[in-house]
Every structure is written in structure tokens, then in C-alpha cells.
Length: 93
Image 1 (cartoon, rainbow, N blue to C red):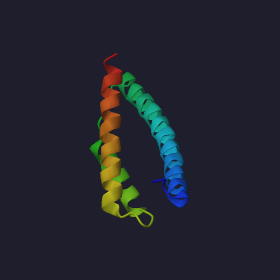
Image 2: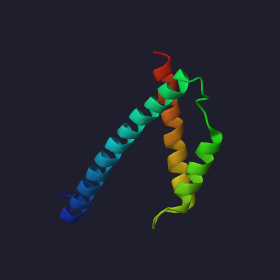
Image 3: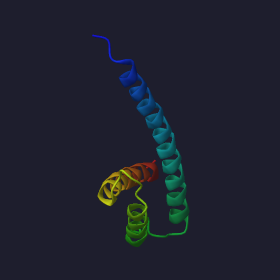
Image 4: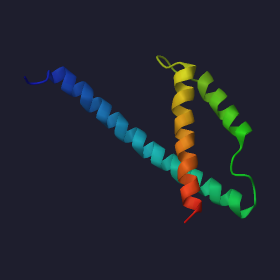
């Protein structure tokens, strides 16, 4: 059975959004790595729990419909964890 054209169009729209999200995540990681390099050169701590807490609170408070704060928190906690992992790998090179 051939998928409905409307469903195909919706899926194409999701694919386009996913590609934009991927590009933004890549851009974010590049900046995270630069921040890490900056901190290392100045012997500053890499992990800043207060910065992370404030960032998550800010983002949760700005969650647009139909998102809620908890969804935003979960998405960004995962993104932060992965950025931290990539940063650790970057420093070991």
C-alpha cells in the first residue's frame, strides 16, 4: 500500500526540521569546544553546575506550546551530557 500523500508531506517536513536541528547541534558543539579550550588555557573549571542550572531554568521557563518545562529539561540535559562527552574526548586528543 502506498503511503498517503499528506503523511509523506508531514514526514518530509519532519525530515527538514531534523536537518536544521542537526546543523544547530553541530554549531552548538563547536562553540562548546571553544569554551572548553578557553577554560583550559586559563585553568578554569570545565563544569559549572550553577551555569547549567540557570540555563535549564531559563529554557524551561521559555518552553513554547506544546512543549512543557520537563520535556525541555530532559532534551537539554541530554544535549548537555553529550556536549560534555564530546568535550572530554576533544581534550584527550
